[in-house]
Length: 338
Image (cartoon, rainbow, N blue to C red):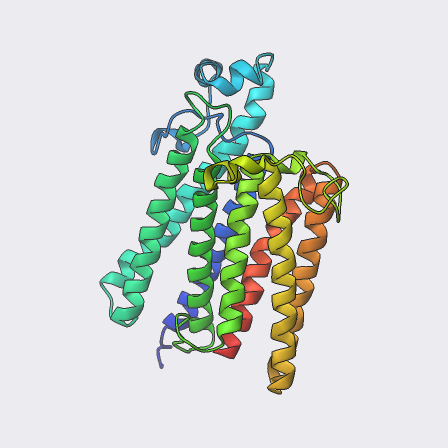
């Protein structure tokens, strides 16, 4: 009887797809943790101790007492009850639990691959680099939380944006390598082919960083009108005598203006790519382009509706979910054209 050979390529494809789904979930849960102001509910790192949630009332009280010591409780939630605390605690708990699961689901197969001659050394190095990014992301997560434990009532928007940026870098690497195993190719993203689509990807990453600034500064709480910012296209409350980078990137008005403006730039750039594909008769991949354009349109509309709704939780969450889908579709277009 002939023994069927193990298809490691297919196994690795499913492994990378599983990782993409897990990172997608942690981005979504992380976004909801931020939107519900739950990120500071656990005030200690607890890499191993916090694997299980509190099982006794005394443990709950201990966690609640630790939360009572930070500025967020003192100045924003002084009347919060233990029952209300449990809600925000579980958001942060599940966020951290997903982080632990991601680490294990990635590390165990990586150790196996290290001792087996299954993938090329170049690919293995990429896998190790992704693991380094995952470890760095865990450290950045605590670095972000730490910024809201002593003086501030929320985390630093600079650290928040860095944390989100790394999440999207990780999922982008996973998606690209997933494509390589799925299609049995060995394409490299960092080459000079299709410069416009690669620029579009970079523009979207920048927009995601700006979006994190908007979230971290609660910049969506002002100018909840569109297309104008109240009665003008440019915010009227900026102090023109203080137009330096420190002032601008701590300004709710400027950050929201920048997020709006960059969205228009991305739309324009995407349309230019479409015209270029038509002129170069790249009809084979026009469907992939139309999917990008469709997802981008949905994303822009979600951003507008989130703003004018007064930051509706469901719309804001959908806005973040769609950003991941947009990154996937843009990377898919890049892959097809490379």
